[in-house]
Amino acid sequence: MRQTALMLITLLVATISLPALATWKLDNSSSLLSFTSVKKSAIAENHSFAKLAGDIDAKSQVTISVDLASVNTNIAIRDERMKKFLFETDKYSSANFTTQLDKELINTLKTGQNQQLSLSGTLDFHGLQQVVIIDVSVVKLSADKILVNTIKPFFIKADAFSVVAGINKLKELASLPSIDYVVPVSFSVTFTR
Image (tube, rainbow, N blue to C red):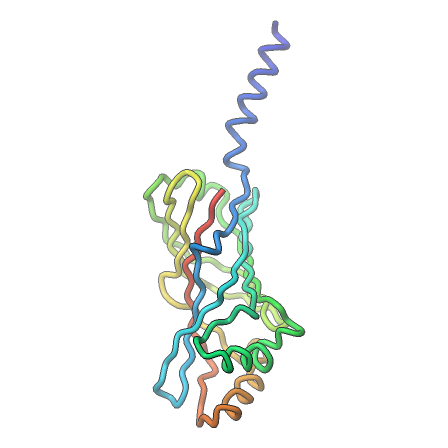
């Protein structure tokens, strides 16, 4: 009897702990990562990526991967040129961001509650890694769904990731006098379990 009670308690504790340890998966259909390019010093255009993947693991490590070949600028030839000359997707298929959340954040956040924080993480892009700080809002939409939004854009500097030559090539191909070397990036991603 005592052994049965001990087994039941162990099973109950394990069952209660499972949701807290469950891996959260990024829902691509409810997520968006966008960036803005500025050409001719005054014309801004928004672009996005169609394929994002990622998760938050049992230790609260966040990984987000962007399929660079899924770039969408709404102009097919520009998409192809970005893939070939800027992102060099034949060599670098994805950009990846990793960061660590407070282990208790997701568990203590109540449904509908919002938590704003600054995330320091590593951006791996074009074969180089840089630490970036991103201000985000984390909202628990339900027991099994969280939303993470940038509060304000973060910036990627072309020279930090050796893509200046790629931007210059795009500028040459499009006969543009300028394309900015600093790019604002925003995202809204949903994780479910």
